[in-house]
Length: 433
Image (cartoon, rainbow, N blue to C red; front, top):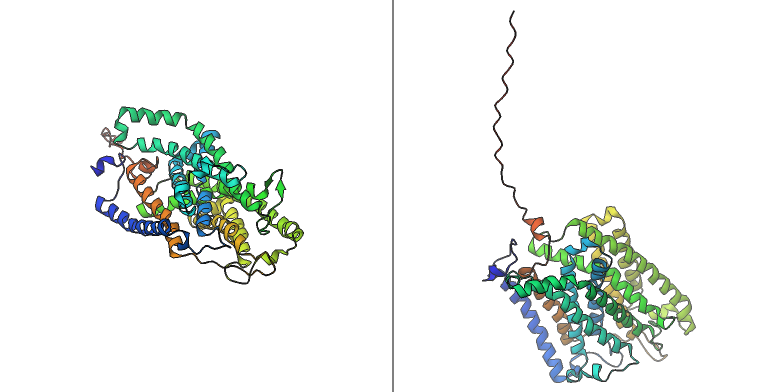
């Protein structure tokens, strides 16, 4: 039965080997569920959050997965709106990654609110003056859009596709996917921006506070820009990990090079804007509030000036340059280095904008507030990662996720054609006198 569900023409590992791997990752899921249960049963006292750290590890993880999961909306935008047809080879996987990231974000929020039975208050008693309300609505609606985008791939399962209704439904949904791509891009733009806007309007936290462009702080645009810039890095990284585990080439070099080129130019443009923003903040914004920029960096290992260098130069300028230049972009090792640095860079940016914001002392009697998450926080943060691994494994095994897989790994051998036997030409007879 299992082989009947595997995409036609594809080869997969044995059933026992596959589910043995699932069982190992499933143990991590159970660990996370245990921690989740303790938090729901005993409350947020299971965490190490306090009056300084109301936003902590969970919110960093939430913002990080939303940033790297932005590939779904940007891939759809490029494929369906800007008609970059080459992305058809990876858009299914980008949607799956986006689905995992956004469902993980909602899962994290469900854990973080503390009173889950009142979660519906967000929608029924909406605080229309809060950007987080807009984020909650856009996250929920965009997750619904991702689910709709994911459905056609599910319906193309080998057995489901035999049902005439499912076959035609998947075909028709592909035909109108441009509508969902445009809707998803709009929703993602606003909630990505509003997550940055929350930090930018915090006047009492000068480290994150930014000047405004019209009604939006600069962080509104920087968060959206960074999500659009770094999503190819995460998509390519997960694809590379999947290829390494499966031992197969899943996406052609042309598509990989195109995504890397897009990432290179987007990262470079973003990092230029980010450096300008940082310089303006350090020389104008912070001094206007009575602080030197060095006040916001500590001598402790966690919040030193090395973080600024790492985010902007090592994980910003360097991957951008490596991916812009064709020679380094098409070098597999340097490309892998660049996309790993890119993923680290956007995650570090979210770490800084969530945790360092809270750690910096803003009153004369304050000191640096350090924070170490509890094991319950770490377990529930790792839970979405384990869930994502399981979902990727299941979709790869049972759904036609990668259109190029068969041609890249199982080339069809041409049938031998019997060529007619041609008798050798007779040698000329020497003329005799």
